[in-house]
Image 1 (cartoon, rainbow, N blue to C red):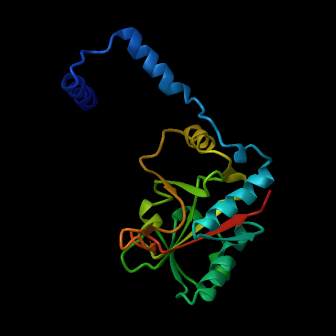
Image 2: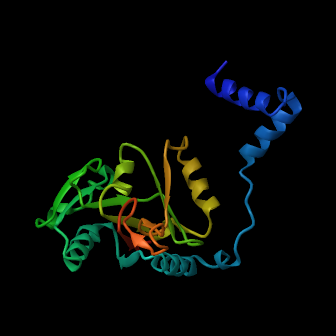
Image 3: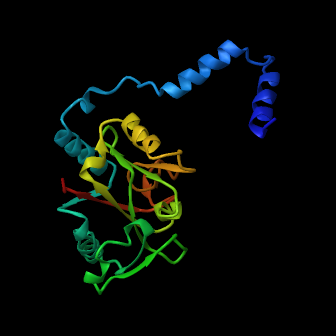
Amino acid sequence: MSARTDILGSIRRSLGRGALDPATEAGLRQRLSAHRRQIGLARTEKPHDDLVILFEEMATALAATVAHIPDAAQVPEAVATYLSDQNLPAELVAAPGLESLPWAERPTLTVRFGKAENPDLVSVTPVVGAVAETGTLVLTSGPATPTSLNFLPDTHIAVVKRSQITGRYEDVWDTIRATGPVPRTVNMISGPSRTGDIEQTIQLGAHGPRRLHILILDEA
């Protein structure tokens, strides 16, 4: 008997329920594996180019900033430009999954690859998807994408391929499932970290990055 079975059995007993009968269990398993779609918002039922525009509108409404660049080769230049415009140090930690980009073409940038540590002020990461419905980025954990990059540095720069922008959350989950087992961690990020706990005044950077900059790659 697994720990999962023990825990679920304990919950059923506390609710005064017995073990599931085989027919009910089979029905539940079928329902879970079907991944049924929920009712979608009308604003997501549009051509992909319009979804890209919607994603940008929703993301900027949440205090993120967005820039378009032609392709992945321009990422180092775009990152350097953003850091200069924000008067930030030209130092960053990037996801190992981005190590193949031409960082050497920007020798003024100091780039380290790996997980984020306390002194790191800027991180650069890829995403697995972006949801136009809410302007949300979806990132997964793994050796090439340490989760600490999403939360520890004060400034987070996310690289999004135009093709990764979808209308609904279900579309991104389809992509995640298609690549293999679901990762240990899936993070959904909508704008910079914020809180309104202090006198109902929004403060950015409360529990994570105070800046979220999104680079959309317009390559085909």
